Amino acid sequence: MNSPKGTNNKVELLFGTSLYDLKVPEMPAAGNLAMRDGLRLFSPAASLVGVGETFFARNPVESQVVLASLADASDLLRLLLDGGNSTKAGYLAGAFRRIGRAELAEEIVRAMKRAGYDVRESDPFEAGQTFGRPRPGAAPIVGRLEMMWDATRDTVIKNFPKAPGLPKDSGAYLRKVDEIYLSDAYHSLSIEGYSVTPEVIERVRQGNWNPDNNEADRKSRDALAARGYWQAFKVVKESVSKVLAGKNPGARARAEHKEWYGELFQPCVTAGLLRAGDLAGYRSNAVYLRTSRYAPPRWEAVRDAMPAFFDLLEKETDPSARAALGHWLFGYIHPYPDGNGRMARFLMNVMLASGGYPWTVIRMRDRNAYLAALDRASIDMDIKPFTTLIAQRVRWVLEKHELKFPEQEEKFDFDHEGVFFFGQDGDSRVRCAISREALDDDFRGHDRDKVEVFRENRAAIEQGVRQKYAAGDTETDGSVLIHSGELKPRAARK
Image (cartoon, rainbow, N blue to C red):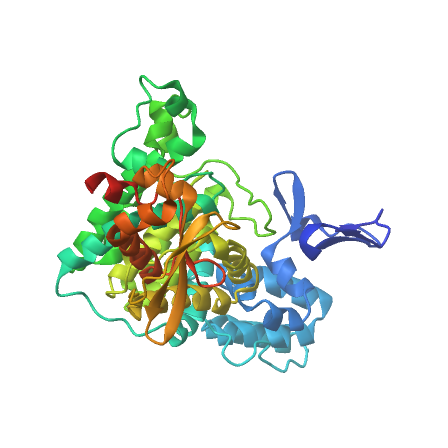
């Protein structure tokens, strides 16, 4: 902050950020300022002249977005000539030439030399810091998204497993999607802070959710979220089916993502917590993210950002880039007041389907690493941690881990209140367990010997464990634990 009344004092803020209160002899000229929301800000031209040469290499995307936003060199030249800034003129000319605007570079050099200054053009960017030629006149958020995509896609492709290609049997693929629903819903909702259980998720899927006659259902935030997730999951699965049939995944997402969002929050409209109009269109207010120093773009920028985002998805030829960058940049734009994380994960899985990758679950136990990786991408433009996390989850499912149960030596563990047994994945021995509550609630094991209940229902329990393990839905130590409610549908069928 520049002010004649400044005290040269640094104010520490959250997340390792700060404001510096800089004392200056006088306020900048009015022509170098722009007013925005009551704040006096330096104009783009004044900002480019004001920063040092090293700023460009430290902030290449931001610098190139601003360079691309200038219609011509007039405002820059006025400041450069009035200040006799021949060194600045040299690296600004080099910056313009680097992003493909050679005409502005030459105009700056000619004008400065005509005024008697010795200008030596230099490139302030480092090797590899050119991210496509920005479109002059495009909204800044559009140029930013295009450059971010171009700057990060190679890292994604390099670190992702090779795409299997569209499956020959789309029906089998979609059945796998159905099988993973319970795990997907539990983890996706839990990441967002909802307290859901497999039993609640299954209850709303079976239609046993009645907000008209059940006050608890009408008011339960968690049940509403679970019901909305099920409704959205069904329409997202329809989008996956179209992608498997060869439709352009970006075009499907553009056409259908608002329907996903509408279904995600329709139960809240039914319960009277939201108006129907609240689900129409993108957000019209600022949003801020708890526990993150990343602030999404202003709501006015969303209208420009979303068409550009879907343009990038439609044009992208690599399915891994569509999936990872699509998830990240959807969250980066944050187009909705709520539900952006769930929507981004739905989008990721539709894009994964376009390469034949399996539906992939981000586990609750990976939540901190997942959110930190998204922050790293959005703040530092380092996509590698996020790509690595997603790729690890995809790779696990691609490897088709198959759990077998050659040993039948189950026993009840009184310390952990459950029946423990072991499965075999190749050479790896995997510890498995089903809780006392699951045996009681899902298999009517109350007042009965829990090992006997387990043996009577061995096939259903082992199949449930097998599906969780194949999806990578394991505990921190790699074991598989069946909770109450997870196997109730199998118990009912039995």
